[in-house]
Image 1: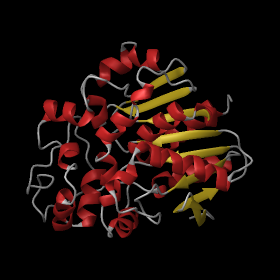
Image 2: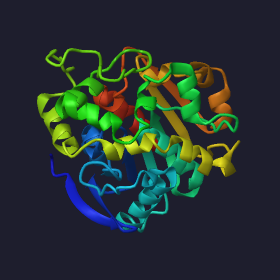
Image 3: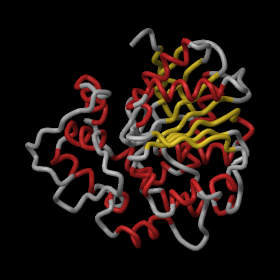
Image 4: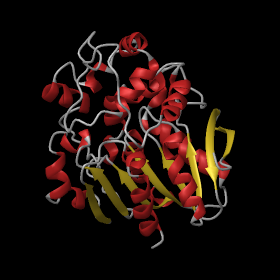
Length: 318
């Protein structure tokens, strides 16, 4: 795809696949679930043409990057360690980088800024506001109390269980179901009922997602979803590990963008946190919050041109 360079690099013993293009200041793109480096294909090309070096890895457990077998190998420390190590390998001359994150990549971006603010020039976070640690409640326990056992993050907790259901549904169908989900509210996956659609139901793709796109994602997830799902299985572990950062602020410049049809916008207390001062208090260098009307969760693909413009206008200040 337009001369994007692909290579495998060894980072702290982990073989990571990374896509990159361009010369100039580094922008690190961090994908979510069920995504890959490919999620950033439009951004890689656009930002490289504007004088940046775009770097987009497959995170551990995804695509052509190694997938350690142990669930415990997917904590926030492991993943942030991969990214710091990756920068040291592919851009050792760069002291700092611009960062863009989405979904789990958005959450990892916040951890990156929390643990190593010295490495981040500025962050554009898509869809996942900062989630300050609540010392009174583990995150999985809190979500279960609000949404019950059928909520997708709860269904993801038991190793092997959701993978078996996804195998029955079929990889391509699972990919299509996730990428076409536009309900502004929680996703439920009742046991044995999949996404609530008959197995032969037609799934109409949006204009921004082609059958070729689906085929690429499907080809990489045919080996299974375990690596990506293991991130969810570390939510309570991450809560335990980050106890020393309770009450800490994010001290890097941030721009936050979310679609008003994004399911994360409707998580408990999210809207109030974003709009009533809590977000700005925890992220004092938060420069702007943008709510994109009529846009769902996969915002970097659905509104690629607009997102590229927002990102460029923000990063060129620094």
